[in-house]
Image (tube, rainbow, N blue to C red):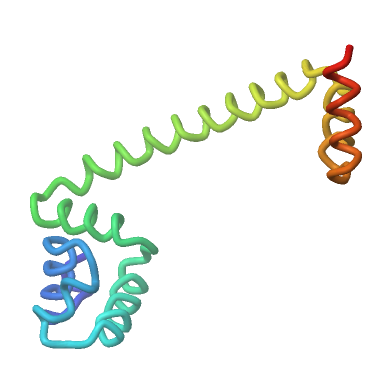
Amino acid sequence: MRKLLSNRELEIVERLVYMGTKKEAAPSLGITERTLETHTKNIFRKLTITKLNELVLWYCGETFHITEQIESRKKEVMSITRKSTTILIILIFTIITAVDHSEFLRYRRYRRRTESEYLICYESITTK
């Protein structure tokens, strides 16, 4: 994969990985942030990635020769994430169906009232 990138692009990747932000890396490379942004877009396109953290992961995998291990871990994490998302959706659905809808609708109507209506409601609640 390193062969996809030019020497200058590899230098840019290294600076981005070690410095963390484009704002910090641009002056050390002697270019503007806008130029660095263009280089970064080209690097992302060549490596088929979309985020800086994926670039860091790629760089570490290539540098320490652990690309296969990273790929297997990514697959594990993705499967766990999908399972977690499914569980979260089921949990949210369960909570929504368990809530008394009349209470929810009453609360929504209460929140839409004007300030004067709010005062009238407040007085009627406190006098009970």
